[in-house]
Structures are given as C-alpha cells and as structure tokens.
Image 1 (cartoon, rainbow, N blue to C red):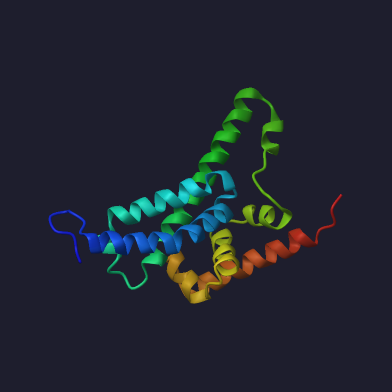
Image 2 (cartoon, rainbow, N blue to C red):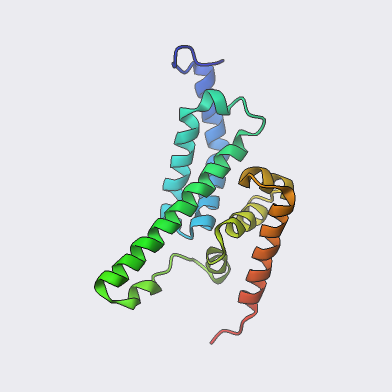
Length: 169
C-alpha cells in the first residue's frame, strides 16, 4: 500500500483519488468563505490537494488527513486574501484611485460580512456553518486549543451579529 522508492502504487493512487473526490467540493467552499473570492477558491483547493498528493504516504497515515488538508486550505486562502489586499492597496497608492477599494468578491450580504472577519474567525465560522464541524474539529484544524477555537467562533458570531443588525442605507 505504501510507495516504494518514491513510486506511488495503484492502491496509494486509488486511496488518494477517493480522498480527493470526497474532499474537493468542501475545500472549494471553505476556500471561498475564507478567501472571500469564489474566483480563486478552486485554485486554492487544488493547490491544497496537490500538496496532500505530494506527501500522500505520510498524510494518509494521519488519523484525520482531512483536517490536514483543511488547515492547508485555510492557510492558502488567508495568504491569498492578504496578498490581494496588499496588491489592491498598492494599486491605489500608485494610481491614486480610491475607487479600486470598492472591488468586492462577495455573492451576498452574509458571506460578504464573513469575509470581513479576522482570518481565524472566518475559518472557524466557515468550518462550523459550511461543514458542520464541532468546536473540537475546528481546534484541530486550526491547530489551537479548544477554548481558543470557541473564542474565534464566538467573536466571529458576535461581529456578524453586529454587522448584520446594522440598518442598511
């Protein structure tokens, strides 16, 4: 079942193929929620799964390889969002056109509000509501203590409640 001299056996390939089919759509949804960009969500999910494939022998031995790929997806999505913000801010400084800051990648009010949360809060909310993950699962995926995961989720919910209760103009 394991790779011999770096060559993936058919069993390893079929194991990864099954893992990929099972996880792909969830990774796309998670990437979209965390990055705030549906346009890049598939790229982010693909990259996370490519990284899993490269290390499949090691990752497949984990108790929960899905938690590993979710953590990678969250990190990639957070980095993508950060990079886009820096690029957008740089374009505004270069062109002097603040209208560039009005670019939005959100499909609706709720996920637009989620996209404005802090990265760990965004990830916790997405994992809890999109994937129906427990707080324990969220803590494992984010690599933090259970109470820290609870705090991220609580703070994210509170920020969403404040934002969504504001009257629209």
